[in-house]
Length: 214
Image (cartoon, rainbow, N blue to C red):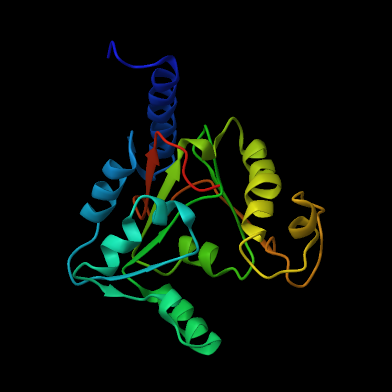
């Protein structure tokens, strides 16, 4: 403990507090300090031979979870390996019926609510209903004071950065700032707040004491 910096001390305390808030809302939740710990915990939730899919998430890539799953003993529904847009769409539909869906969250309030924005809706749909379990890996940078702050973060931080990953023509791609647009290719088509996990324990949140994703 003596070697901990003030930032580490604060991060640990915040992480533990957010985990308790998530548990009060019936999520299964844990806090760990490093990417390596997060990957081990996530893999411990995956039975061998089970089917695994994921939504677009930089966080699960950064902790090495996707590589571990691809090289593990799982039935992988890998939309990134699709040879055509049609095959990719098919895999995205198949993911809805998988055993485990992997993703992150755009924001997480200190009182344990998740806020997510989606363009196609496949990611938030899978988080709500379909897969037997959902594993969310979130860096401490995703935590906000209130659920209102979480929505602001999702709209003004996560979405404009995410837009840079896709060949869109949205205002945020050009300016880096949210313009509250209504374009057909907006990645902010669906905004979902998950305030309670139902059934209890279906969504497992691994909160990491490092910055992950955006």
